[in-house]
Length: 607
Image (cartoon, rainbow, N blue to C red):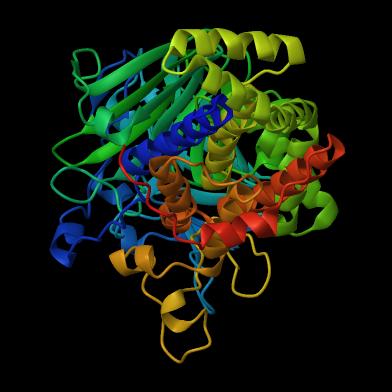
């Protein structure tokens, strides 16, 4: 076996091994199931735990006259170009929010995505604000999670049309909450306290995000539960990013100060905390420069996940008014919107997108892909354009590699002569080979480099396609209307020509009856092999013969956008290698190698 074949087999085997490990460790996420009506109904009436100014958790109190059942509470509509929903005057909760620009699937008539939902729904999810009682204030003197507020100003919450809620505790304290929203996904919440009593009062403003879990283990519906993706609590505290999966939240130890399963962060200057899913996020954001306590909690009895921010206690003298402003992000994790909020002062907000361990590659790859798409307007062609640019960047390396491969072909007669002269003396043969390589300035390992360089790029692009919302339901052409999903076509119905449906993507049959893109991937890899004659060793020849078709089935269940990249990469690599090797005086006999591949290798007699 010559060194060129050794290196090529090594590089191919390594890439095959990495893909195989990736496929085994990170299988396609399984769909989650919703719970029955009894489990859902059991959650109705659940309340979050509200903080106190002394960092202990106490049940919110409100008199019977000030509360109404959730379904009877009046609501205020929310309507912006990108959001619609409502907030409840019971607690002033922002608890119903839909994203106008996103549908749950690409099926015709599919509903738009629901982000927040009120208590009593299948999976309650809402934002709640209030004041934690401190010096001179009892629990009944502050508004609780079910306190009935009055709409004092405004009618519908929208861009440039804020609303103001008010509540008078009847003992000289008046609370107001002004809520505004921008053209994207950021709410601004200003809480004020007017003290008309004869004594000084102290209380701490807070914000809460609450998610009601479904099921015995507290799992939430709709989660991907995929290793490569972070879903759960996400926060930034003075430049340090924190990510805690929902399963780890359920394993929190009891915090004696919070009297709950909790993890607490003390933020000195800048930070935020909230929940992130695959494409959506809610985040509590105090004003930049603010000191506050951030906490993530889990109530195992009522299966409620909770994140909160508690600002320092405000002391309000008689006759004075104090106010504090915070923000709430509730929407899609769009790169441009999040980057703009970061520019406005939300520290490292762009890191709320799960860039992964290879962030130094995923960030620039996404930036490049996003800007190409702005020019082209089609994500499929943009992926092909991205492939061209990556190949152009790596061209100097590829050029050296293919020149070295061409020279290796020219040295074949001399290498065969060395083998015959050395006989069974392998050390002598290796010394002769090294001297030949040094004399002809050939690097036998150069052929491995382009393949090895593609592995981190491939993984980084996989991450980009999987986690970024810009690739979600991104169309290309024809049947390829979602590049973040596997190829929807199938050999089973001859790619749509036969009158029956293809196997479901999550079924085992879909792994066998692959689509047209994986098939093109296998063909492109097979043609790339034919630039060189098949190895003379029978074992090597068999490995090479099976390699394209194994990869074809392995990658058949991957996102179609990733398969498009691989096909484009193989096609460009084939073209580059053919032209470079020809420029060095060696013309690959592609058709001859294809013909020889169909011939049966003659058996040799044993000696």
